[in-house]
Length: 188
Image 1 (cartoon, one colour):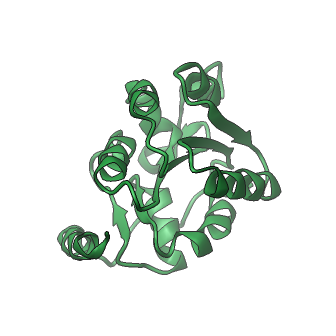
Image 2 (cartoon, one colour):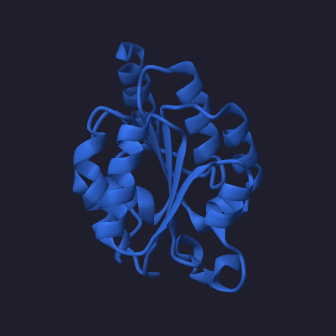
């Protein structure tokens, strides 16, 4: 499955969610589907999307939070899984796109290309609702379950190591920050 296809599955449902993406291909491909003021593209902070999502989920408990992450990012911050499990916000879904590569910074292989299992790490860290998916159909099923479960969920989506032709976006980081901040103020 391509990451862009996976994002197309999720995109219609996140129009009202607080959405945090990691840098690179995830951000660019989500942006290409159509930017929304509730999307925050966390640039230049590779391993912190899940941490930011946790903070937002705890501070806005009545609002869904979706974190769109990558394997390289979570491997740089494995403690995120035990911290997420400790706080277990019911309104947070953490989607990790695992392409077994640091695609955005040169395509170097990650540990998931050999022996590491992100879904296993999340599950063993205490995130009970963890699912590994390989097709858009499996992703849709896991996504729908997470939306109705009202429970902390991690979905690890195995995707191809391919991405956009360019990683450039025509939204300025500060513009995105201020727009997102204004949108958050309105969220109850």
